[in-house]
Length: 143
Image 1 (cartoon, helix red, strand yellow):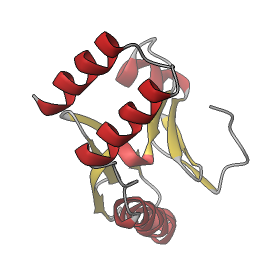
Image 2 (cartoon, one colour):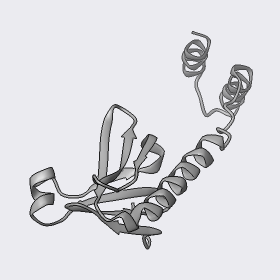
Image 3 (cartoon, one colour):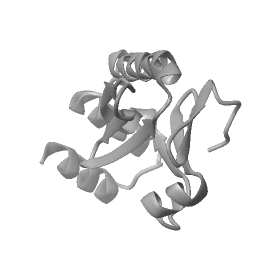
Image 4 (cartoon, one colour):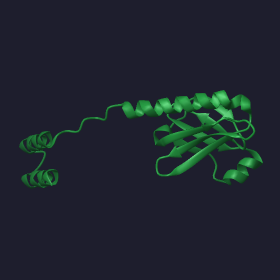
């Protein structure tokens, strides 16, 4: 997966966040980053894998963006600077928009069983399939 320029990035508590068109990357920084994530290195999450995002403003405590990833994993980005609240909210809104856009894309239509049988018959008539291969494929479709 080639990375284009980041759409947005911000530095947080022990890590940095970069948001791209189709994924985000969390990269540990400094001693705090090492303590929080060990030697695991950067975490890249495809946006289509994010099921929900939580946002908490920074105030008396750190703010955060929390990404629930399909499969039960959780990725969390913390920031201490209250001036980053607006940027964090913009990131949340952008990612939610990307997720909705991906969910609303129509899935490619699948051929009906009749269409697939017709195609198999054509392939057999053209000599691309033997009679036994045709029967095996037909049985597989009808089961």
